[in-house]
Image (cartoon, rainbow, N blue to C red; front, side, top):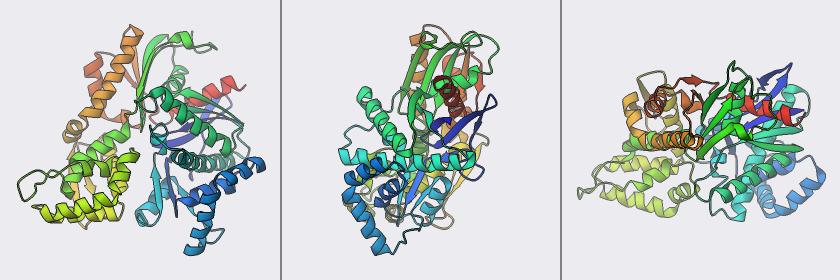
Length: 454
């Protein structure tokens, strides 16, 4: 069976074609979108799960040999923690969030691993770790889809951003695609192809077009923003080679997660001492606060979790004019609530698409602790990443040498009226149309999969 696979930064989805129509397959109960999260009772149990779910004996033997030390540690964890062989050790999607919220300090939580795949300076053990995280997630998604469909999925087209990272994009893209390919093969896909995500989103849109137009496709994903200027419509849809129809494309590692980080830093972190003063009257150092919420940066997270940062916060508590705020910050760090805080920021971003004000509740930190954020405040705080997104759109238009007839928006953050208003102000009087903000990419990948694997 053939599918389109949107392995997204924020959510994952699988699409298939039935009776000439694309439909998304439920992956978690009736939900067709699975949050890109994983919670493990212990980090080494991720690799163990991969080994257990490898169906090819030769591939399994090779993997066991490559991960021998990790798998030995996993067995030791099982003995020491009295974890039965049939006990669930990995949780995905909403279940992963639930486990993390309940036991943040006890297990290992990963959100949006796709953000890290193109990271520069990753050592071999880091690459192997991300291979295992992505494989475990893909194994779960493929198994859930096949259980729902009642048959095996063998061929897939996986979406990819234009660039996974901004620094040395060629090497970054190669590294990320290698990890995704390795994971996909270990998950059991026999044939894997890749397609740019904005092009996939455009293919879904094109299927509904009744006239030829030049379209600026803007896909604001969780980890990246990708733009493509494409000639689309009835005269182009059936063409096998579309290379001449793509007039320009841009992409950068700036997406919805970066908006969440800005909201967390600007609006929630002041509750933990950011923007307060020391007893000397000097401002509180801010970098350790940004390290706490920059959950899409391995280096920032490692620094925040280091002993050096703990000692720095303890010293700042002694030097602070408001030590209670620093005590909260220490509590947040010790209990590993920083992911939860960024999740609060994401919820605020989503809510402010439909309402003018949102109250973020932080009772898990301290009873009654909350923060109200208005849409205007949200707009002001996200200006730096928003400006980068607008620049990508302008560059794609410049590459094409023509103005778009229409702008087609997809991706979760594209729903925000703040972003839409900024786009119309920058691009001009061009109609802005909405796609399925979460399903367009998966649908387009499915259309392309049927075309190339037929």
